[in-house]
Image 1 (tube, rainbow, N blue to C red):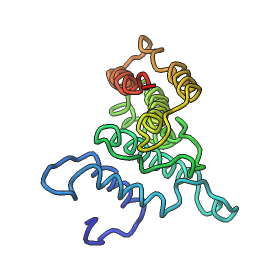
Image 2: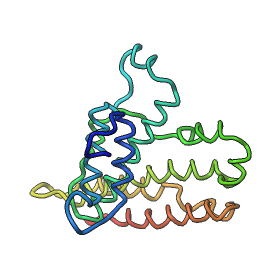
Image 3: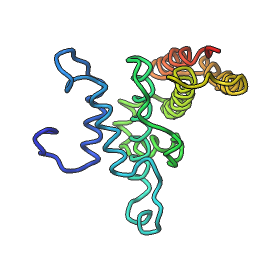
Length: 209
């Protein structure tokens, strides 16, 4: 449906591209994560999701739920950009200097669960579901740090990072609260989420000097 123009809703097309970026195949370019991640990021930028609404009319034309959805879609693309760049050794597509959208909040995810029928929530959502939302926000922080590490470590034909730049980034990495709270988690989902963050955090690691 994506390639036959059967869908015209840009939000749906963006969601589809993000999902396809998690599918990996060696058959051809159009079934590889890097391709679909680029498509998703392009949709975001065409829709202006990298920046908040700038006029009163724009803010009034979309409700808070829609803006929360758009914000988390943008940060999902950001997450894929950083980690695919590390995995595949390719340049970052998103420059945060061009972006003014706010960092994600746990409320961006919780807004959907709040209106979920109680029986469905009890069946499918873990008791400590609010922790998953906080973990997602923390994972974006870890991804942001990774992007800064990549930008400093792989500068082709450019000056080496200054000692102050390296030290400042290392301080930020060490200050990231990723190692606390694992013992207080109740469900397997949030325990897995905590381990997932730990794994990603290890890649931020020491910065070459």
